[in-house]
Amino acid sequence: MKISILEQSALSENSTAADAIQNTVWLAREADYLGYERFWLSEHHNMSILQGSSPEVLLAAVGAKTDRIRLGSGGVMLPNYSAYKVAENFRVLEALFPGRVDCGVGRASGGDPQATLFLNPPKGIDFPDQVAQLERFFHGGYPQTTAMPDVTGAPPLWLLSAGGHPDSGRLAAERGMGLAIALFINPAATEAAVRRYRETFRPSPEFPEPRVLIALNCVTADTTEKLADMKKASDYFRLMRDSGSYPKVVPAPDGLRALAFSDRQAAYLGMIANREVTGLIDDVAAGIRARAAAYDADEVMITMMTFDIEDKVRAFHQIADRLVA
Image (cartoon, rainbow, N blue to C red; front, top):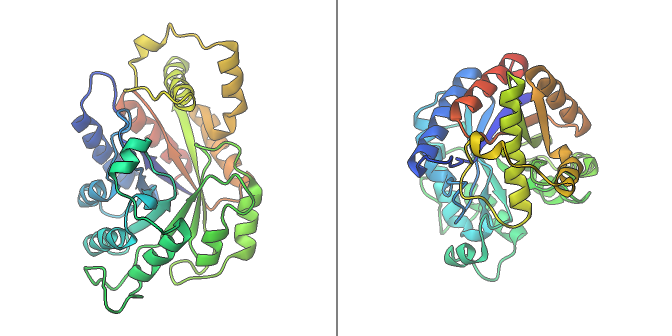
């Protein structure tokens, strides 16, 4: 089992957007040193707490500061763009960092309706057709129109999926793509989606065999006091998110300690607990292994929201000590 990181460039209270982006680059350097398999960046728009709006641009900065870790999008929200431009962006990244680039694509917008409107998504094309276009641009399928630069390799394509239906991985299986299931978004993701994906998978040049990645929220610390603060921040974000009211920043721990969740909120958090692993480090390591086994996953990607970037770096060091080969 391989361990990877999904980073969302969270904005903490009393910090700046530039701090959030620079923290992402720092975290990538640490992940590279610690031996994590890949470092993926999310795409969000018009959402203050999550500053990562352009994974392609930020991946160029991350690649320049790292040596071996794979770099990717988790993901590019393909309906926002033309497949041609996405192919060009990722071919530039492939030219800069040959053999290290992944292209993860999703069908959500990553933002509110206003932001989606301003992104000018292409009209008259559905998501599966866009994926097919992107594949052809990667592999020279349009002889009269080449996605530049004309590099020899192509980034592997991963399909980001909520995994809520047994057919959720069908497109990935038909196209010979990797399947990344966002358990941290949809805790009700079904193991049947993985099983059907593996059973119906058609090999491709980038994926001769099926490849399954699950993405989990992670909350861990080396003291129970620190763990309680981090868990409160993570739960607060999820409750606000699911109520349709994203917080602007990750609040400072002092401001959250007095906050008490209602019985209804506590019950809801219990109902969606499958989205994450939480606890002191040894419990978290065991939880990651167990979740990977339950979903027959080849790889686990962890994401973590903290007020202090140093807490996140420390946690990733501890996880690496126990799980990274």
